[in-house]
Amino acid sequence: MEKLVQLLIRKVYFYYQDKHYSQLKKQPLFNDELIKILNSTIKDPILFFDGFEISLSNDIYGGKFTREREIWENFFLAEHHIYLNKHFLFNLLGYQNQNPSTKLFDFAKLIETIAHEVAHCLITDLYQTKEEHGETHQKITNELEEYLWSLSLVKEWEIKIYALQK
Ligand SMILES: [Zn+2]
Image (tube, rainbow, N blue to C red; front, side, top):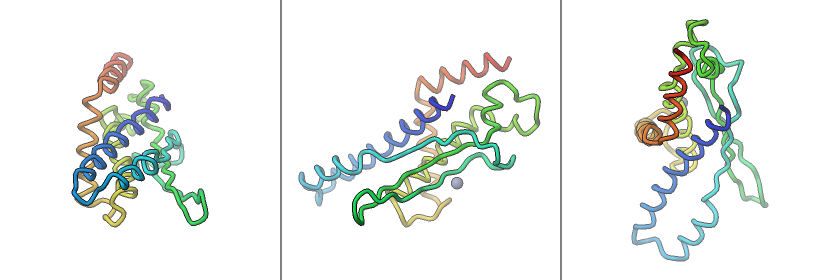
């Protein structure tokens, strides 16, 4: 389960980042030299799924924090850590009827939360100055969610979840 979430986080992050940079590269101020630098430095963000967090309260779906790592002198790289509420795991395992809170943490909410948290990472990396839950964040979240639902991996996973929960 953790591996699948990690995979989706990376997939959806790269989907947006690739699109963002290919649009940037079309702009006239971008020359080949700059593109080379871009391709070699920014391509590999550090993204971690830190697991299903036991300590999160019942009304928080997930969260992320970013750590700045100094890799060379004065050169920092952002390291993003995403974590999700434990109720998602209980729901995925078929315990959604045991606890009224767990019911709310269904598969659709999981996909939405992944999109929401990855959008925070993208805003930190690509837009820096935008406010946390502003219009840009909502726009990116919607786009990522749509992309996630287009993946056959997500569709197949959903079918398996519902089969398990019957
Ligand atoms: Zn948020």
